[in-house]
Image 1 (tube, helix red, strand yellow):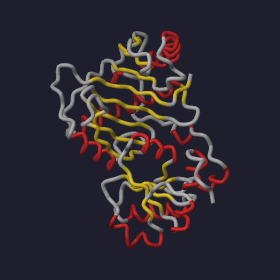
Image 2 (cartoon, one colour; image 1 turned 180 degrees about the vertical axis):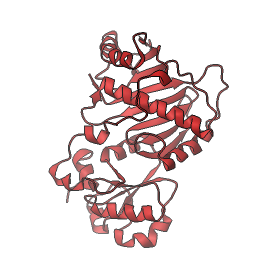
Image 3 (cartoon, helix red, strand yellow; image 1 turned 45 degrees about the vertical axis):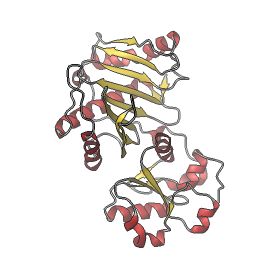
Image 4 (tube, one colour; image 1 turned 60 degrees about the vertical axis):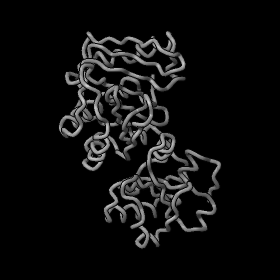
Length: 312
């Protein structure tokens, strides 16, 4: 069985006082600057104002890392046809362990975690319906992988909850530090698992060291992650089709880049990614550490996300 999205949640230690989540914002920004977590980190989102919400999130291309009153949650994402459930689960657990170690090493966020067991949430509701049959199929696919990591004593128990909610399990007998996991996962990236772009966008491969896929931008928009789209094409191109970004033609970039925010993720695009790759290189050299190139440009977006826009 394959999955596109799943989440593991390491609970907060029950006896510990409720943590102040505000320091997690600075913590996650430090993680982005240091490249402390697996995956391509993009931005930090603050949902502390949402009752029962996700708390503070570090959004990355391959996963979202979140801390809330409930604990640490890692949502592993993959595009296209997805990944084998056992493989994706192992990667998510590896990411969770890396995050716990990074939090402990940083020392700036006083939250305690109970790492003897964890929750598993399967977010593909069509592939993993929240029914007895769906739970049995998911357990048959996931439990062998879990026992390979934690030993034969590891067990899964389905949480009985609203059948309209995602399928959720409590995994017991699974001390995370004792798991047979590598220090860092060799990620099967969303880019590798995603559908191949149409031939018109094939020129947009490996354009810069800071490329992101159009699916990553789509995810950022869907989740409301703070970011700014910067369009470095010419005005006449913008009139043909656009992503509602800030129009800043490449030739004007040196004059106007000082007006761009440094505390937000900048997703820079052009028609096919060449001009925006040069723009991102210049922005990075100018100290914009959160500037990224939209690989394949707006044509890749049209081919893989929104075919209603006009190609040119």
